Length: 522
Length: 74
Image (cartoon, rainbow over all chains, first blue to last red; front, side, top):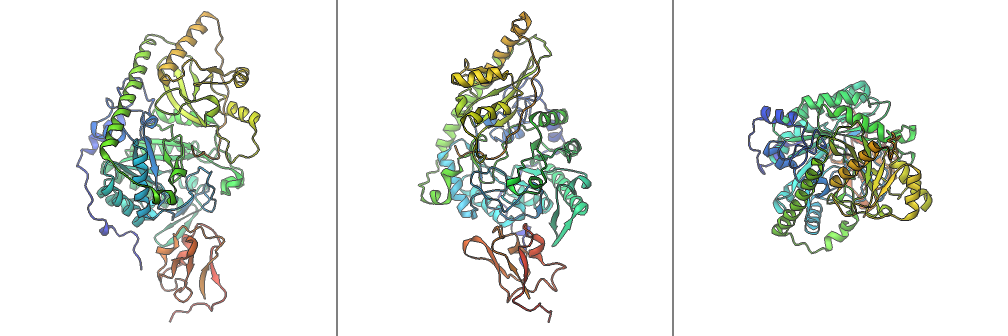
């Protein structure tokens, strides 16, 4: 009989430096400041925590990780390799049979890779995209239900591309028996998807789990799962491995219970909590898709994230990417790196040129933060209860640098007298939706950013400008190619002045729609 | 009898392969999986339930193959 969880085969690839866990976790728990130079007020995190707010060993782990640092996600890219197709639980939001190249749900990939193919792909991507700093294994099944493939892949990559951070995403069912091995392989970041801590809630999300050679159903299954998840989380914390908790928000099923999840994971040392909207459409063939279970609206999601934020850092920049995604979080370049293409690629992995490029990226990043800090000074002393959202069209680098019509997503910032805070993003691309023409496209965008007062773009045509104005959204192109947060604060200051002078009246905007479906390949 | 894998349902996820106590499951052409009926014991004598059925993410994918008599432990 084949042993799938043989820990003795792991081999010592490396080991973690001992750290004082209590001290470190207390520092993680306490920090709430954000931004590279900190001090921009509480939690524009996600985690936007910066180097002055975190212990150095933690800052070093998160600073270039686009998933763990909101700030880093504007500058650094990640990739996933789909080496782990098997799963050991069934979720009502997942259907493993569905496969569409334009589908962006986790759990869906176009092709699976062997560890050797994956290692080649990582080198090919790292040579092409020097700001690619993170390699994750996230499926399409559960990486720890495929331990040999997962760890073989890590081993190969650690040898050939030692500067790349390794991370893994798991449902947590077999996490406790793999924590030691994760530690040996220098896996610094582990994401656990935790949707409940109450098995009664879990029974509505998980029809079954496969554990110790048996299939369990209902509450019994959910009880096993939650026990194992929380035990695994505690074990990670004990070893100083950073953990991020992903939770899928399912209105009416676990929306309020997620507050309890938040408390449970916070108390066990989780670094970051990522509450994501349910993706559910009938054509996905998932149980929730077929039963008509809806996902949350933009404001429902934001309200839950806001209510958990006092407890811990919230991630709001997750794009719920596929298990084979490549690139910045808002883009997917996986089509450039299919197995056929990478096998033909000449790969020249040059560590020095990667480092040089990343040094330039770091300068750009410092410039973004410096500009924000400078602009923030102009708000010093100003107090107003007005808060507003703006949507920003950006291609990255923290700048307003995308045309309105080319944007596949908008980044959402909340403006107040404490500054500009990243609070989310809205997808507006139209692939796999079917039947949307040009006119519908604009209506779709408006629905997606309907809770925003303004949209910042590099350029915009006359027609959409007028339609946006009619919808109460101010089209702003005066900050083209300037830094987002600096521009947003300047705009907000001007807005407050206009409200004060009576030139405009501040109105409260309504809700917006979270769009689902595909993320296009760039 | 033995179990078989319904080709149209198989996603090629390979979850069943390592769980089979008889190494009866292997990857076939096209990335899908097949069960060798000569090796399959329906997990009798190994586990309480057939492992391929228990772990398969798609219902009615690992099913009894009527072309073979039921397995009887020796």
